[in-house]
Amino acid sequence: MSKFLVMVILKPDIKTSRLNSIQSGIINMFEQNTKVKQIWYLGKEKLDFKDKQYTEGIYIKLDIASNSKKVEKLRTELRKNRDILSSIIMNNDSEKKSRLPNLKMRKFPFYKNIPINNILVANNGKKIYMLINKNIRLPFCESDIIAISESENKILEIANKKLQEYIYIKGFHTLKPFKIIKEVEKELKVHRKVQFVLDNNSNIGQELIIQEKDLI
Image: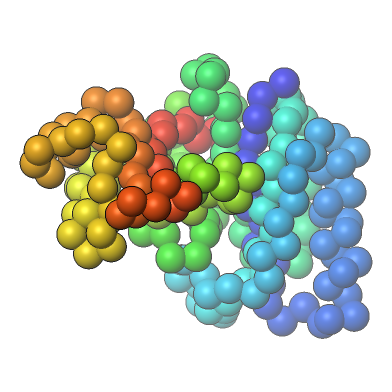
């Protein structure tokens, strides 16, 4: 079984009396066909893509484990649901790099406040890069995805700006000793991870990570 990240966006004008039933139906479908590890009901948020009719959507995010055949079946079922504005299923297994079935999508929705830079989802084996920030002192907290791009150079550009924000604006310093910001940028480019603490407070720590993912 492989790990997948699922984002389902429902139409924002669904009546409250129907919403719980619709959400339960989607969750039940995944629970019957996959191993659902975690569910986030993110509520109504502004769309990260243009739609002729709507500017908002009701977001549901799932962390699941399944095989590619069942994922293909679920993708088809999601497309049939007229209450769903858009959906995506993304490979979330960093240990496996296998090429998986193509996922043809009408839209490419993700999370609130995430720059999406010319991502195409129609090609098999398409790789994307994710810039992630997380609290290293509270590992159980959900990570914050800062940016997603199919260009590694673009992600590094955004990451370098984030590094400067941490160091020069927020006052963080790196756990490893670096003399200049270029050394920190090189560390992130080579090792894909940089850790920070705030002043002398070891209880406040952040980790900036770059992860490579496969679209399906």
